[in-house]
Length: 173
Image (cartoon, rainbow, N blue to C red; front, side, top):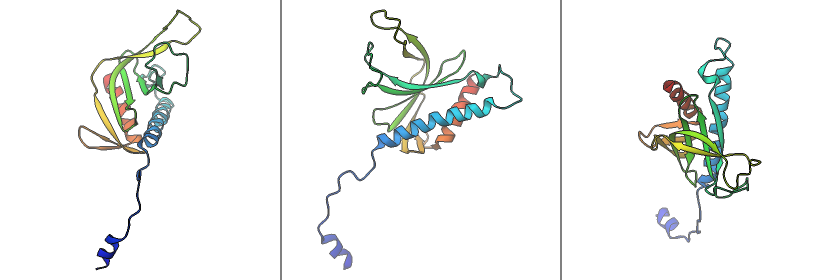
């Protein structure tokens, strides 16, 4: 009977119960970049591996790509975030979130730089990506520390996703 009384009481209006996904997604994305850089630094610091070792040549880059080809504003609000793992001699991995950072797409891609606009060489060249594949995998954001692989439902932490990317890069070479 107590439950019926509780049900009949007036309820407060709840608007937006959940914390916005975008801030959690941005945090996950920056954590993934930091973890990849830490993992690469650890691998490179191994004394028994030479300078010509594969992982000493792998590079991580990140930033925003503007849909406007000749923008001079470095803080474009409509830019798209990306994280790119450059694999020497091969196409690397491009990870790109959707606008709300709820879903992350991974592609095989090559990064190229090209000067755009009026031929002014004072501005740095804009990065472009040439996709070498359709989306290889999709990851759905769970929270700021975990994503779920859409294809098989497996859950990955930031560290596990970093390890997966490094293993994929090593298997390509």
